Length: 355
Image 1 (cartoon, rainbow, N blue to C red):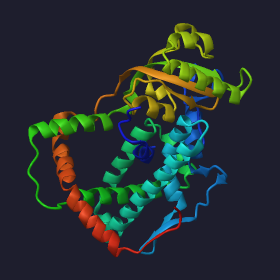
Image 2: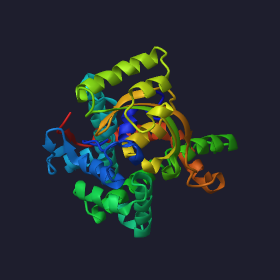
Image 3: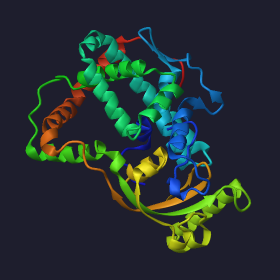
């Protein structure tokens, strides 16, 4: 599968500790309210396999400043569910990728804390309207603009809206510091600007307007000889497809959903009809290969995307042109920034409480 970003970075972007359904509401055999399912997934974000995590536990200390386990798990959360969806049997590959994910996120939190400690006096200078605008964008991108879902997420992660806003205030400071002058670089050419915009437009699009068409084979856990047997069957079908079996024929023979007679074809499905994990796997990859088995609450999925229609970018090229210049400048200065960051790390007192 060719992801737009590697799984570790993908996980940096999204993973939950319990799965909600990853299917369109209309596709589910046992109907559940879409928002309730999504909220359930978000609520699972702060629950580890063995139960609730210790909210006051310490993940690391940086110059005496604490990074809590709760902070770490909130960051890990939105992508662990994607890993769980991709690896129904879990296993060593799942555990390795989850470990890499936690390490990468903790290291990033440590760097952010170092930067914030150095420049925290600047935080108060940010107008509240800028922070509120940032929060609005997060609700739009990550919660389909659903304020109620966002409030449930805050409750599940033990955060008030004010605390969340303060987190974003720190994030904004780190972003500004990372984009500061770290040596002079030549101004970007028009070709560079347009190339950068093409990438930016995909990552900064109106995701709630994504629409996809895909083929699906769905095996319910409560049919056949139960969940384990259905997972084994899904794995066997996956092998047959890899060996050249026709997807449509396999869907008509084995699939348990409403589109089985149509060869498993689901046309023009809006991303807003899908659970978050499924939306990530469907729209944040470019592969047209068969994905799966992918697990949801009620069964196992084999998916083959035939068409993606991504939502429009949030800004036109002309509107985003100055931003593209800053992004390219920052990227060109990255080596100098990393040298500066390495020096900052060497001066900091860092204690990791988990590995």
